[in-house]
Image (cartoon, rainbow, N blue to C red; front, side, top):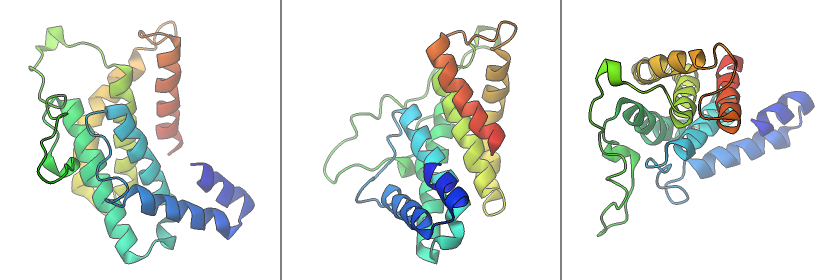
Amino acid sequence: ATFGVLHYLDGDPKWKERAIREIDVLTDSRSFPDWSPAEPELCADFTTAVALGYDWFRDGLNAEQQKRAKEFLVQKGMEALGAHLEGKPVPETARTKAPGTTDAKATKGAPKAPAKDKEKLPPTKEEMVAASALIMAAICLADEDSGAARAAVDAAGKIFSEGVQLFAPGGIWPEGMDAGDEVMDSMAMVIQT
C-alpha cells in the first residue's frame, strides 16, 4: 500500500518499479514457497499485499509476472484462507514442503468439528483479518477469475458481516481494544477498496 500511495501522490516511476520488485519476491517460490497457511493472519498479510499490488500495478507486470501473481493469490492466499474460515484442511496447493520431509504444521490446518448453529462462536480477530484479505483479493480478481472471487466472498461474507455487528452497541471489539484496532484496520482496507 505504501508504494501505491507514493506512486499516485508523487508520480515517480521508482515507486512502481519497487512495488513490482516486491510483488516478484512475494510470488517467487524460491523466496516464499508458501504464505504460511498454518498462520492465517500472516497468510492474510501476504494476500492483502499481493492483491493490492497486483490491482494497482498490473499494467507494469509482464505476462509471466501477472500469471504467477494470480496463481499465488488464488492458491497460496485465497484457497488457504477460505479453507481456514470454513474449517476445512488447507489444500496441498497452498503449502510447499521440502522434498523428503513431512509437513509438521499440517495438523494445525486440520478441519475443526462442525459447530452447531446455536453453539457457533462469534468471529475472532484472526477470522476477521482473513475475511478482509479474502474480500480484497476477490475484488482484485473479480474480472479475471470470477470463480475464485466467488469462492472467496462465499467464505468471507458471513464472517465479515457477523464481525462488523460485534462492534455494536458500544463500539468495542469483544477480544479487547488492541484486537479491535486490528479488525478496524482490516475492515477499513476493505471499505477503501
